[in-house]
Length: 113
Image (cartoon, rainbow, N blue to C red; front, top):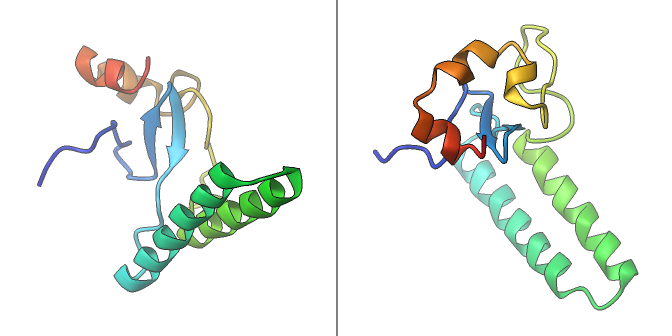
């Protein structure tokens, strides 16, 4: 198996890119459900890219949001221990700060830090 393109938090909830935590896909999703949602997400992103006007763009962005919610990347968190959602937070301002600081410099650079 190849290394993840970005550092992943020890609990597997987030990856770090552009110096932000981004919520990962719910690992409890079945493979078929995940693949269908990813396909819908990619189609919706193409619709955003190809939108002819603001109305089409808004509708396409709503489809992106819907697919990301199905994946667990937005909306209610998929973990059940009561931990808050830290999506889009800088890792150094979160409980992951020590983990992030201990990463090799190359991984922190890959994360955009």
